[in-house]
Amino acid sequence: MAEVHRSAAPSRKKWAIPPRLVTDDSQPRARPPEGDLLRNLAVPFRGHITGGMCPGKKVVVVGLVDSCPDRFYVALTCGRGTSGEPPPHVALELCVRFKDQQVLRRACVSGSWGDSEKGIPFFPFIKAQPFKMEIHCEHGRFRVAVDGQKMFDFSHRLTSLSDIDTMWIKGSISINKLA
Image (cartoon, rainbow, N blue to C red; front, side, top):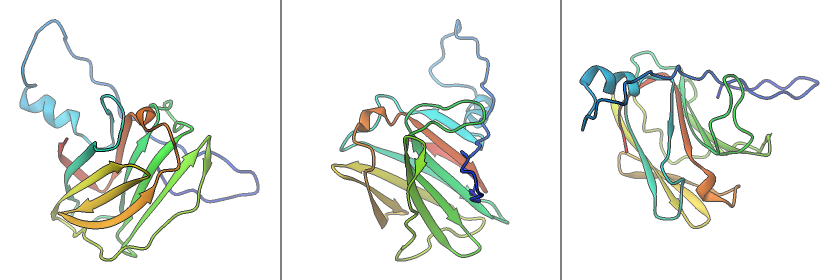
């Protein structure tokens, strides 16, 4: 989810994947201990979206911007990819850049990245402040809101919404809650 600089030969982006936690599944628990909960939400984060996306479903990220932020990424993908390669289908990648106060978004279909969209009515992310980002899946588009204010719509580039089953988060934020 890092920026790509084009050279003569096109190449795929490299993503760092957080290590998997080893847990003892033989012990049932209703809620993980606080230390496990914090480790499970560590950035970089990669998690499964149960049942994939569908119209009416939303994902919510409640987080805190770092005190000296550069950028952060949130992506919805089809599959987990490998240790260094993203999956060939990325339904939505958001790149929040603090230096120029932009929220870039784009998609990757069959390994080919489309053009970035960047127009937003306001920049809601403030250093060292909490935020709540909601990504609503609707027929034909994702609708993204931050702190209850609509930021933009992003038309679906992939038609099989149920295949969108993984969320990636990376960069200058910490995660407090995912839903």
